Each structure stands twice: as structure tokens, then as C-alpha cells.
Image (cartoon, rainbow over the protein chains, first blue to last red):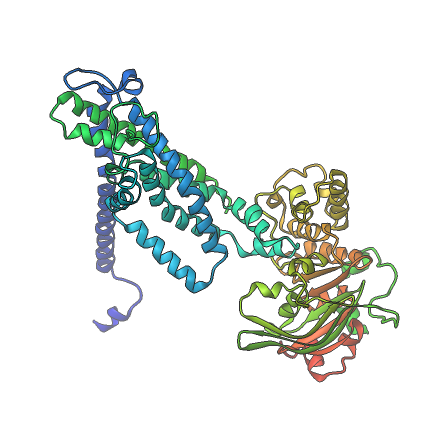
Amino acid sequence: MPAAAISLRPSEVQQGWRRWKSRLITCAMGLSAAVVMTPLFLVLYFLIREGASSLDWNFFTQLPKPTGETGGGMANAIVGTITLLAMAAVIGVPIGVMGGIYLAEYGSERGNDGLRFAADVLNGVPSIVWGMVIYVILVTPFKTFSAYAGGVALGLMMIPLIMRTTEEVLLLIPQSYREAALALGIARWKIILVIVVKAAMKGIVTGILIALARVAGETAPLLFTALGNNFWNHNLKEPIAALPLQIFAYAISPYDDWHRQAWAGALVLMLLILGTNICVRLLSRDRRI
Amino acid sequence: MPEVQSIRPPEAATRPSVPAAAPGVPSPEETPAFDIRDFSLWYGPRQALQAVTIRIPAKRVTAIIGPSGCGKSTFLRALNRMHEVTPGTRIQGQLRLFGDDLYAATVDPAAVRRRVGMVFQKSNPFPTMSIEENVLVGLRLNGIRDRAFLQRRLEESLKLSALWDEVKDHLKRPGISLSGGQQQRLCIARALAVQPEVLLMDEPCSALDPIATAKIEELIQQLRLQYTVVIVTHNMQQAARCSDRTAFFYMGTLIEFSDTRTLFTNPANPQTEAYVSGRFG
């Protein structure tokens, strides 16, 4: 029936088949979306089921108890993680943000392509490799594991992440703002700082938070650098506890009580990261650009 | 002469009359603001301006017309070195503003732009700043801290751009909360606040409705008392309505430059005549 094949108006049968196809594909996409969501809910479900019961005031205020004694907490690991993140931010935020500004506003096209490629490769470097490199640079020469080494490892991991997100948000700022400011006879560095970076501030902060959330849960780079510590750290030149390390140590131990503590630690770490991501959502919600 | 009258919209008659210096009447004592000789400009290998020689008078409105791609925007941007934002440009020739060579090796482009302000086709108030901050940003970022002076410039600039009465009670509101036409007048106020000698306007009304356009044109008539204005426009009626002199560019060359009335009614060059009578472009 060539006439029917040429006709632009589909027959009843054709329409029925199209509707059926449409439903099938919509279903497949809906299922895929559900599959994406499932792991998140599974993670949260198990963490809460196993960890919530061990979460109490002591968990946040006490040091780990020696083997054989029950109770105790991860106060030192929580403070340790925050300390490590602060040190990482001191290194990662200024270098990452300035690098991102350089990529977006200065530099030659070819040089920047090279820099971007380097940053993307760095983003893909396995985190244990970072740990090993810092071990050689900052642990062996000083003959001690230290909080500094852990902070540097996390900070270096943050640099390429922050650099790329900063560049991307700066490039979103319309060229017309830069031109308007140039036409007022304002110096270039002032334009970048006061007008471009200010307009992109929310995006930059979002990128920093995402980078922090990303490195907060890193264990591998801390294994040979910060090492972990069952007590309070009083000197950043000495090993420091961190939540992921404590979870690792407790999870592979043979004691049920420690397993419960590991679950609780994992829940706290997860909530920390979830909280950061919620902050990111709130920040980026009413972005003006 | 009657042709110029016929393209004026009826509301032109109701607008306040322009004081002094009837448009289009060249006076011998006119001082040139820009004295430009054999000025050529290249984007990479492509030549966008061909040995332009022109003397743009001070305290007059000069319109630049021509078909798309004729180099009129490029020429305008060369007047305050804004074309240098595009990488790979090169110039040749001489461009002087009140005797000073703007392209001398020792001249800072930022200093040129403080003398020669610019308003763009699309209004672009800074999104993070209030109305007040937008107007004063040029002064503040050029290091002026004197509160009284800033306050005075704020009021003067907004009055000059005919925006004061509309915004004086909410100067702290974001600049982008204004309507399109108001935003464009805010951009004019921002450019005027730094007290430039010249104001360049690159199709300032092409994104505005007729009422907002009329307000800006009226404002241009006020500005010519104090400033040298150079305006690029696609709209020949606009050039006829609000300029004293008109330059016609075609393919990067200045074809004709004379007082507006002459250019529109009795052009010397056949290409100009073809363009202004609507036969091409």
C-alpha cells in the first residue's frame, strides 16, 4: 500500500504501535532512574539501621576505649577529620580558586588547554597514589606520620577539583559585564575580583563545598600520611585520627562492639557529606546567572 | 529637506526643543574631539577599517550609519580601544583625542576609557550591585572614597540620564530590577558618572521599545550640551532625528561625512544616496 506509506497521517494501527513504543521506552527510563536512586537509599537504610542505635552522646564526646572495654566514642576522629579538612582547605581553596581564575581570565589558549588536561588527569589519579606520593615527600624525610601530611594529601586532591569548577562558573559570567567594566576604565584585576568573581561567588563556594565533601570521605590518602590515632592529637606534626580511618580500623576488627562503632562513624560521615550537599543545593538554588 | 521632516515621527514635535546649535549647521569654530588620520584596523588577516580619516566635532552628536558588517561598530570600539578585547587585532594610523595620541605606547587603555565612556547595545548593569552601586562603581574602583563627592555624582549622573525621578526612592534596589529602558539609562548614568569627555553608544536603542527609545533620544539631546557623543545606529531615522553629523561607512571605508541634513537630503556620494534612500543595505 504505497499510498498509505506516503500519507502523513498515521493509521489507527500505526498510532497504537507508537503509543505502545512510547510507553515501553518511558517505562525503561523510569526504571533506570529508580535504579540510580536505589543505592543511595540502600546506603542510608543500612547506615541508619546499623549505626543509629550506637549513636549517643558518648560517641561525640569520648575517645575510643581499649580493646575489651565497651562504650567509648570517636570524638578525636570527628575533630581530626575537621582539622584535616581545614588544613586541606587552606592549601586547596586559594590555589584552586586562583588557578581557576587564571584559566578563565588569563593565559594563552594553548597553555590553558595543557593546564586543563593536567587538572583532568589529576582528578583521575587514584587517591592511594596521592597517599604514596605524600608519604615519600612528607613522611619519610621527617620520620613520622603527621596531620600535616594528611592535610597536604587532601589539599592537593582538592586543587584540580576546585580549579575546574571555578573556571566553569567564571566562564558563565557574560562577557558583557567585563566589557561594561572595561569601558569604565577600571583596571583588569579589579574587574576580575570585584565584578566577575563576585558575580560568580556562589558557584565558586559551591565548587569548594563539593570538593570538601569529596575529600572528607577519603581513606586511602590518609593511610600512609595521617595514619590515625586512638587519642587526641596535640601536635600537628604527629599522627591524627580521622573518621574514615577509624571506620576502616574498626570495620576490619574482630569485635562486635567496634563494628557497631564503625557503623555509627559511617553514619556520621555520611550525614556530614549529605549536609554539605544540602548546603550546596540551597546555595545554588537562586543563582542569578 | 522635506524628506528629513517626513521621517520624523509625530511625537518629535512635542518633545522639548533642543537649545542652541541647530543640528546640522556646521560652524567653522567647531573644535574636533577626535582627529583621526589614515586609521586602519585588522582582525587577524582581515582588514575591518580602511584608512579612515575623519574629524569628529566636540559637543556634538555624531551618528555612524551603514549596513551590517561595514565596520561601524569596530570604528566605535577603536575610539576607546575596546576592540583590543578581541585577540589578534592590529591598527595603523593616527587617532588623537583633543590632541593626545590615544594609541601612543605610553598610554594605558584604561586611562583612555576613563576619558571615552561607552554604552552597549544590550543593557548590562552589574547583577550583584544596587542601582547606586552600579552608578558609582567606576568612581569607587578608580579609588574615589569622598562620600560627598560620590553622592553628588550619583545624583548628577542619574539626573543627566533622566532616571533620577524614577529611582531616587529606591537606590538600594538591584540594578537588574529595573525595566529594559531604565536599565539602559542606568548604564548611561554609570558611564557618565566617571565624567568622560566623550560618550560612545553602540546601537543603544536596538533592544528597546519605541517609548524607551524616545526617552534615550531625548537624553542624547541633553547630553550634547556637555559631551561629545558618537552613536552607532542601524536606524537611519534615529540618526536623522538626533545627530548633528552623520558618517556613512561601507565595507570598512568612510564613504561620506557631513552634517546630518545634507547627508540625508543631498548626499555627495551615489553610494550614500542609495543607502539612505533605502535602495540597499
